[in-house]
Structure formats: C-alpha cells, structure tokens
Length: 362
Image 1 (cartoon, rainbow, N blue to C red):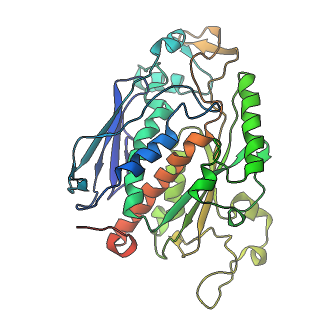
Image 2 (cartoon, rainbow, N blue to C red; image 1 turned 60 degrees about the vertical axis):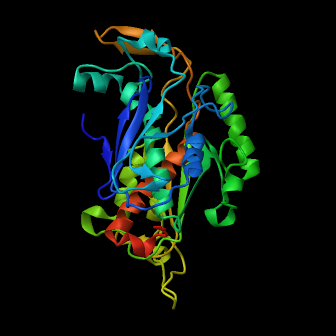
Image 3 (cartoon, one colour; image 1 turned 30 degrees about the vertical axis):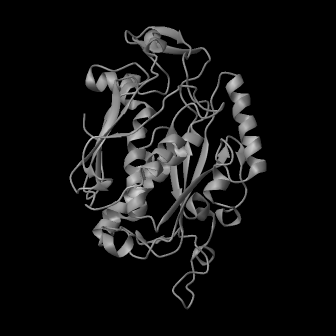
C-alpha cells in the first residue's frame, strides 16, 4: 500500500489500524536542538481522542503518546522521531457481522477489490483513528512555527450556520474549547449540540463545516505552478477522512461577483483593503490572513437498517453496531490544524526555516 507518507522536507510516515495493537509513525526532517513541549503534544491528542462528550463516540482510549527515538533530554536530535500509541479499548466483536458485507459509503468494497483482503475491524487502515498519527506530527510542526497561529472552529452543523465572519469572533483557545462542539459563538454552539443530540437519538449522523484561519504568516510561503500553497492545503484537507470539499478565500461565493467587486485593492503599506483572495495570490502567501473552509460528510456508519450487498453479490440488510461518532466535526478540529501545520512547516523549510520560525536551539 502506497500513500502513507506526507511531506517533503518535514515528512511523516504512519502505520497501524483502528483495532490493531497500536498506531504510530516516524517523523523525518525535524531539525536538531528543538526543545519540545510534551504537554502541548498530549493536549492536541486529547482534543482528538474519543470519549470527550456525549456528542462523540464513547470509545475510551487514553491516547497516550510514547516516543521511541529522535529525542534526548527533551530535545530533538535531528534523527528520525519514532512514536507509538497503543489501542486499549478496541472491541473487534462489534464488527463480526460485516466480515462479508460491504457497508454503504465505506471503503469496504474498494479496499477488498484493490488488495484482495480487508481488515473489517473498525475499517482497519481506512478508519479515522489513523489520524491520531497526523496530530502527533502536526503538534510538533506547530512548535517549529509557533509564531504562525492556526485556529480552527466548527462553523456549521447540518443547516445550522454560524453567520459571522471570523473577524467578529473571539478565536482564543478558551473561547473555542468552552463547549464540546468547538464553536466560538455560545448561542450557535447550543443549537449545534442540540441538533447533534437529536440526530444521534434517531440513530443517524450529520455533517458540517470547519473554518480554519492562519494568522501571522509572512509573505512568500508557497511555490508557483504545481506546488501552490492553496493546492497543498487542499490536498492536505481532502486527505482527511469524511472530507468532501475545500474552498479558500471567497470560494464558491466569489463566482457570483464581478472582477471589480472581487479584486483586493492594495493599500500604501502593501496590505489589501479586502481579502477575498484568502491570503494567497499566485499560489504564494501575501501576508494577509489565510482562511479556508472544509466540508465534512455525515459519518457513514449509522444505527439504522440499510440495504447493501455482501461479497457474493447478494442483497442483504445491515445495521451499525458499536461506538461511532454521530458528528465528526469537534474531533476533526485538531486534525485540520495538524495537517495545516504540516503543510506550512514544509514550505517554511523551503524558504529557510530560521527566517520564519521561532525555533530555539540551545
């Protein structure tokens, strides 16, 4: 299986399955002498882990990180950073009923047709549990570029939208983490939570949108033609489980405007009066805030009976069992931020890392 490595200069290779012994990875390209904040790494993992609230899966995993190599006396050595996270609460019996059945909108059929075998326990490698490794790598990447602020929040759940721009919101960690849906507007958050509970009680799932904002990013991040900054961000976001769409800046709304309405006019200081470009022009950051939105579909496993097929082509009925997220959005926040950090740290290295980061080498 290819496709398990992300990044160029700062690279992460991951391994493991949802119901295997463990998941883990190797980070290659991290500079030597970086003093790591391990509490921040674990904090990011805690934001992603299951069992946080009544609106996410009840799977009870501590998700404790264990570093195996590449760190000595709390500092990176410049050698590959190996890490592992053990699965503690996997209940594989919950998936015995789908050994020979393909779940609708899952990867069951495609994996089996491509590889001739599939791990049906929780989806195996295709499970969103794989993203735990991305969060570890992303948490380290954040510490390499800590002057650049990456902030994500839930901006819609189903038909409930946060009808405020990010500039109108308090995007502090305290504000976003105040409620389990991770929406910085308390009134909208209550409606979102209520909607998820309603959908969960019906045995169904629901999707929505996450908005991500990048602040303090310097001019010049990104490469022209095939390696544009927004194209790499798009690839990173679309690699996340359940993501169905990505737009940055004015996005699809910009198609409704004329050129004179859409152009970002320059001010004397080189900034722009508006920022419909989303902080990126010609594939390169222009110093303005970068902002984008990611669409997540409803989780495919539902607690309702559905018609499907088995591996022999017979029509059968299936109903979800076990523990699943009724809405993936709150746990996807640290994943979105981590993938963003991995893209940015790679580009910063291309552009001379010391110029853009706040690395302290002691």
